[in-house]
Amino acid sequence: MSRSASFDFQGMQAQGNNVGLQLYVLMMTPLPLASAAEGTAATEGPSPLEIHYAYIHDLIEQGKVLLIGPCMDEPVTPGYAPVPPGIGILTVSSREEAEEIARKEPFGAMGWRRNTVTAWTPKFGSLIPTLISTIGG
Image 1 (cartoon, helix red, strand yellow):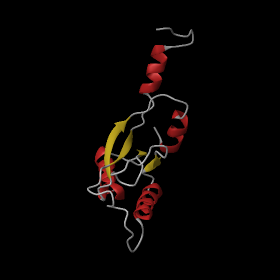
Image 2 (tube, helix red, strand yellow):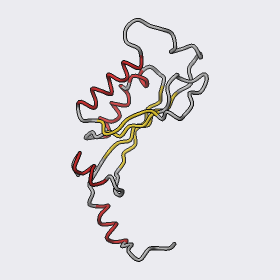
Image 3 (cartoon, helix red, strand yellow):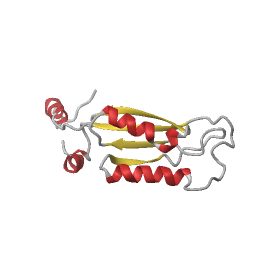
Image 4 (cartoon, one colour):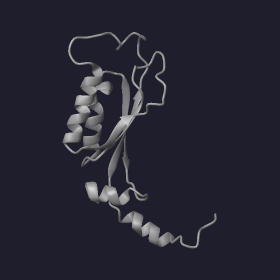
């Protein structure tokens, strides 16, 4: 392994250990549908997408979402839910709170997505100062 002359392992390790950020990554994966027509029929009232957006909007208003969105270049697979996968970065106080958000996410609650939560401790990168000033550290 080659190291540049300016690389300071101990300094970098100390910097990473002092960041103090705890976030949760929400992975939203489309699920197969029992029938390809499932979930595509028109219904009265708000559409599933409108319900999903309202849910996300409420989480953002509560300060629980740092980033969230679809993986738009991923194809929607025939026989699967008519939504792309998605990823979110949650700024909540516990894993339990993140898992509750995952359970209540409308596409997950409809059986269109499997939502999983992973605890994440970012330590390095050009966004660390911005994250610390935005959500604390």
